[in-house]
Length: 373
View 1 (tube, helix red, strand yellow):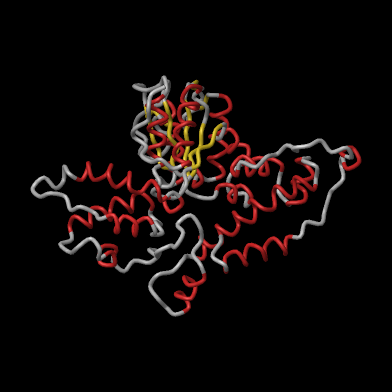
View 2 (cartoon, rainbow, N blue to C red):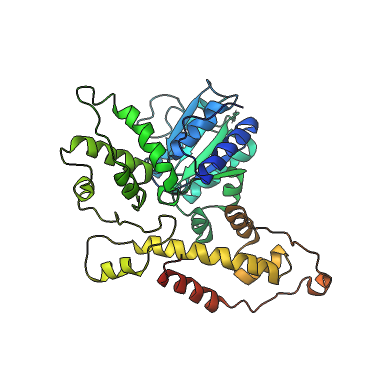
């Protein structure tokens, strides 16, 4: 098994990602890569391609968010002469161009519902028709997609087809944000410093002190690795000592120091918001963190109360069985009982209610106030 050197880090998450890449590349299963902007989703996809038997064959990327919907269809499936005004000749689409190789659908969640239906057919049947054409083209394509959004919310809101999601996500790779894996920061600094050396040939690189590295490990990296790269360049460009992090970062929102980078900040950060200080935590992030914590508490409890019957647990939670399976997979929740319940048959088909959601939510809020979340 080849060592993956392109992906830098020693955190549990990164080690798990590397293991998944080896396993997925061996079978070339359709995969979706999840993570915030700047965490390195493109690199993960490129590494999957490089580790697979399709390396050297076509690798075609299409950004679903960057192309207007009315043009995206022709980009993906191609067209024949006269399909629309300006179509003066035949054009191959991305699917046909990627035949035998990989098609990377970036920002897949931004695709319109109508186009999702057409994409589903290609994924299911391995064939499509170009615009204004009656001929059917068969393709052999390994589809990898990525998104920076909470795609399960898109599914719940009806913005993304659940059946398409499950076709695209035979496997799922989730990359944690940089603030949740601070142990990777020193290794990333060393890695990108070697790259920076090529751009600063006429002068030696400034050394970042251990104290400054510790400070960088406590920052809330909203832009993740991409932002870290920018900061490292700023450190080299500035003539000031690297301890002047405020000058290096500039007065940009969301760059708050975090006492424990793997958890939400304590109440002192919220007091800063009330006093009108520059540093703050976006409400969207607070909501996301709370929502995630509550789900991790509620789902195991719902499973236990329903004696691990998925249909009953999904009714308790008010979500579909497929979405519950997705969340169980995402959070690594045990969906099977550790012991066999003697009275299991007594509860089959019965909706078990009584989960104290108010208590769980109060626990979550108390943890935030105590700085333990």
